[in-house]
Length: 177
Image (cartoon, rainbow, N blue to C red; front, side):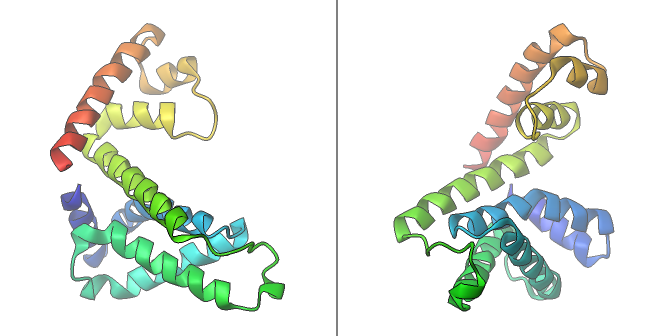
């Protein structure tokens, strides 16, 4: 898990634009989950994400623990949310109230779990990553026929392949814990 984050950071520092895109794809969920936990509207959550990733771009060369990137992003996002919450709330109609400590703790556990799964999916790679992403991380309900066409699998193989891929993913997650 952490070796993936460290690898992405090193590739970003070397100027690899695809690594930067992969880093954002992998960790944007962490930032948005923190913003949602603070009950920010979509536009404000986008502002938080833009600010957090801009700070990350400036901080990459001095990032002390690249393997703890998800935590760094969550902390930076939380601080940015708090900053926005201090802004005059009349100008922020979508901000309802600051979450309780218990709500933040629950949100952080969910964020960390989601980040671990996303990193494990990247480590899994290949067809399994594509299949599990299509089945579980797409915005629309899974369409087995479309998935089978896009991956070149017979429709009847999607379920058994899913089971094998989930077992591999579970092993990766178990190794990381």
